[in-house]
Length: 334
Image (cartoon, rainbow, N blue to C red; front, top):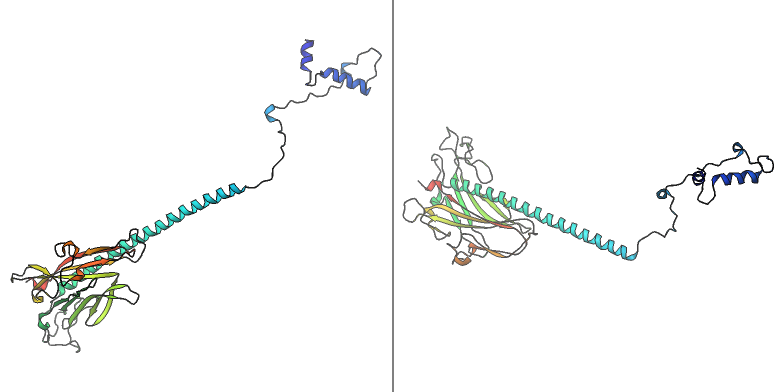
């Protein structure tokens, strides 16, 4: 038991708590005692035992701190990583811009092509139309439709259509447009600019491709000599005339303007090349566009007298599309 208490009250220094307490009382002479008399236990001041700290909770020894900062190598590595990230972000941004520009050009080209097709088909179907015969209604030489062939590289043809409008019921057949009794249009026949055509007025439209002062090609329509630009970025327009050669009211061949007998033309074959606005196409290449295919221009070689049937597109980074369609001249099919 005594040995257990000694171990219980022993400090790391090798002395027990009881021995230290006795020495403290003796040194300070706090308790009077006879020689050889042991101090009473109640007179001994027992200091509280020191609490042992958990070895993992001891306060670590403070180490000398170094000055903070980056070395030159660390700075250079950081700059290289930043430049690589900036380059990757810039490449993604440029690629996204090009993609957006290409998608915008495709949408605009499709919209213009659809609108051009609908407009020319509507106007061509009106060619040769007249309401009831007015006193001064007559097509000069039956030229309700005509065309010109511009025999030049990357040049366009032109198309001319003529027709009369439709009047409201009860119109005076002897009236003229300059008199109050002139026949009022009923709104069923309109020209290429969207205006109603009076039944007693011969309307002549000319479709052609012209260059604006800034170099942009436009498809324009001239109504009775007054020109109106309609669609931008139309680079080429080519025509073939569907001719009836045996008088059976059906098309027997398609030939260029100037070869066909225009009074026997029953249909048109029209081809366009449209381009986009942006010059950042992903793969700009120079190539030839065959307006009417190998059956007309074999080997992408234009036939004699119709050099414009092959369009040589430049490598300027623009997106280009080719469109072609047929339209029947309804007023010549019966």
